[in-house]
Image 1 (tube, rainbow, N blue to C red):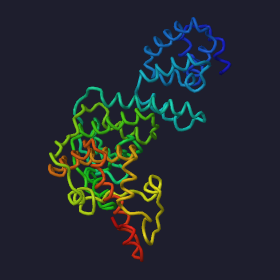
Image 2: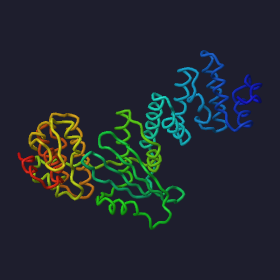
Image 3: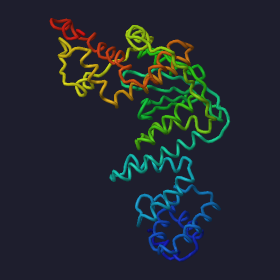
Image 4: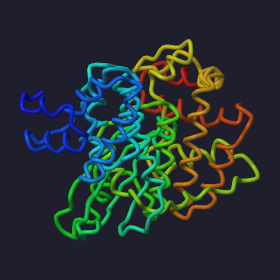
Amino acid sequence: MDPRLVEHLGRPPYDMLMKAIEVDGDCSGVVLELVRKTRLRKRARLIAGLERAREQRRLPAAAVYEEVVRRPPDQDAFETAMALVEEDGGWASLLLLTHLMETSSDAALRGRMGIAALRMDAKALTSKGASLEGRSWLTPCDGQGLTAVMLHVVDKARIPRQGLIFLDVQRGILDGMRKLVMAPTDELALEEVLIAVSDIPVAEMDLAVAADVLDRACRRSLGRARRCPSRAFSVLSLVKGQTLGALPEATPASKLPGKDRLQERVGAGAPFPPWVFLVEEVEMMTPSSFDPRTGFNKSVRFLAEQISHHQGMLNRLRAMCAHQASWHLLRGDVDAAADLAALAEAQDDASLLPLIEIMIEGIQDRVAPGEGATAAVSP
């Protein structure tokens, strides 16, 4: 602590905060010293005084309690400071939490910061607000359940901003990137670039629906206690305050789609890159090995039956089908949406066997021509 502050330690919290800001522009170090020197039974009174002073000066909680969060003298001090930082919310709190999440050498602290930051963003997404101006798009998911949301939002200062956030249909938020749009003509740049480089069609949706998609992703991440990079939070902030809409849910078809129909929905006939397993996934779930020249050393039917016993994979496939049903519905393809919704809600695990076979055959179709390839894919 700056020697010029030592003589002020016995003064009221407001005086301490003001003197600290006057001396070095920061007060969190002084607050840490005050908390450290105050006995536990008197700490509530100290915190109450600090809060009154903070409100008078309109200081963010992160500016006051940063050092207590970083270097807490005890668990009680840490929990109190964390609660105040989270409750205050705002960019200062979010930046502090994400910074500690990415830089702390303490794994437990990194995890705690990540969950707190995500909880703040989820709360912001679900708060009541007005409709924002802009557009958004949803990509289909791939064979590993990965998808993306693209945003073009005009902020209160009439500045257009774009963001791209990557999601997992099961695990939630993965990563994100954001940029300032320099001219109105750049509005569709994000959409056009994505389609040009990856040949992926997108479904346009209202910003309110995009906020709902991101809110659900936040909740999935929270449920799995997953950390998210700060880049993702900068994209989520684009739709903070947006009133939530609802991602459309398709009415399931009365009959499950057969394999030929599924080929049109998610296989070789789909309007997006076909769903295909990773070779490593199949090898991990089955007693098989893969040769780039001849394919798998087991039949597709055998591999599919083995994979159908892995509940985690079945859950992923159902989540993928549910996502894709909504994607088709956004694009106006009611029949495709109904087929995939039926598969997503099918209770019988065997119902997913045709889909699993298609995703295995997608690997085999890429096998270099060679003797033995045909035998490897025989039913």
